[in-house]
Length: 515
Image (cartoon, rainbow, N blue to C red; front, side, top):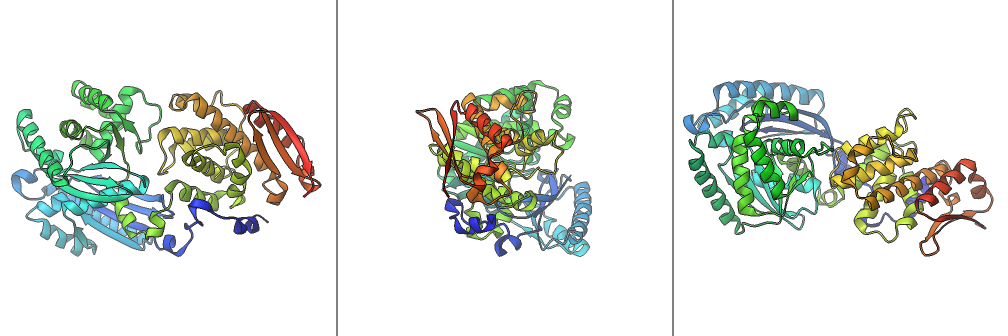
């Protein structure tokens, strides 16, 4: 019955699901190997609906670019470690039946005089063709990675690696002008003295912004391990409760305080407190010098961390335009529902049922409520005593794009209330400061509406009746079809309906109508 109702309805602005179409199936088990100046990483994406899952993700900090400025050659120890890592990765990829594997190398390999010899050795020992990309292409791919998670991204992407730093202008869902400069921490270690480094950094940033034809941007998107390490310190300094780096935001004032904090603190202590590797933390002070000058030049109003970069950009490169245009949040939630819900497809039916309660909301909020409905039943296998908490934790920490931190908490709280009336004594209390009072109450309404609507989930959607909210009269009306629809409204359903009406500060009213 549910499938017929779904087929008959319009999918609206989100379009029919594509996660199981031929375009998405072709992108399953896509592997990317990124050979950078500091690290070598293998990522295997799976189920590329639009916000893909990380089937496998492993990084080795090899330091290929260490000492490159002085010797002109790849670091000898780093080269051995990189080759060992690449051999391991090629074997793993075969075992995981990766149907598309792309290996790219960036600044260190393209600049080193023994770069071509390294490429040849990689091919001989692993069978991998190493594609060495230039700085402009690296910037473009990293910019595309940001667009994977932020389709509406508008501003400047700044990606820092070990040896280079890239800028890409993001405008209207596309990557515009790009430029690369030799401003990575490993490269700057060769410049002695803070004053000399500042001159080098300022000159490099000046050349880069001149190439772009623009220096100031309202939003700065940061990509790269060194930037993420700084963001972790910012979270630690501020006591920020949600340790999710993607879409973590800082003001320039916050960032200045954190850069000063890093300069004054013991790096080993900071490393332990933020679970940062020793190799990464050793580059943070130099990265701080660069970021300070970038922010002073670009003068952004907001600084955002992107966990997506060149690897995700390579996946985005393979996506057809029809898939790129999709909402990453909705497509990911649809895929989760299809894989894990008891009744795949009922999320859309449920959204239609509760939508009248949110008719005055803006599109972005209605999109979030739609996501809640798609996910409302995906954790049903969890133990009933912990189901609400598991839903909350899954939503707030999930690998989801197109979702701010406050929206994550809203999503989690709505799903918590899907299974539990009260939020006291739950994990929400720690994250409550990230959600204002009005949104907290609305998430409760959304959760209780799903909790009530799910009472009808095993039946014909036409028997669910209709909800209608009368704000001026402070009345919540449920119209039930006479007969089977009326019979479905049992004692538990009635209690949940009254709880929903109470959260809306409305009087509940039930009306029986002829079908």
